[in-house]
Image 1 (cartoon, one colour):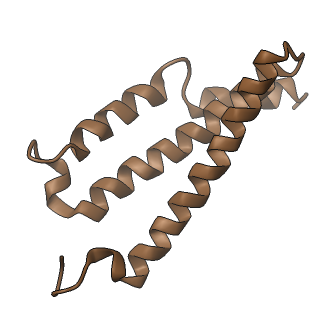
Image 2: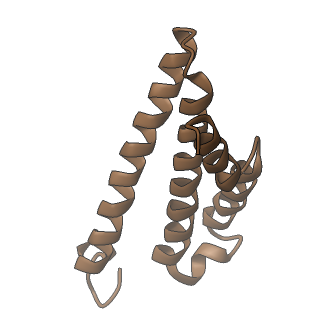
Amino acid sequence: MQFGQVIGSFQALQHRAAKMFTDLELSRSAVEAALAAIDADSPDVPELVSLAKAKMGDTFHLVSNEMVQMHGGIGMTDAHDAGFYLKRARAAEAAFGNQAFHRDRYARIQGY
């Protein structure tokens, strides 16, 4: 609650939530395409995996930052799990190559 209203009722926060939702859905689609390609033993697995890792990493970064911002100061205290999830997000971004690595790999596979 802020100013006697539910935080989600503020239009600016609704816009931020909508952006995160659309990015999450796009990222989910990229991951599902990569998983389907792996299951099908498709020749385009490397490019789809890099595309998914780069997109999901960007989304993970955005969503974890927004989570802390939208929860205010409590987001960086031990009293709330937001700080824990932020740290996990940063570790996951670096695992198996970060977004820059996978964007570069995707571009090389595409011939750029």
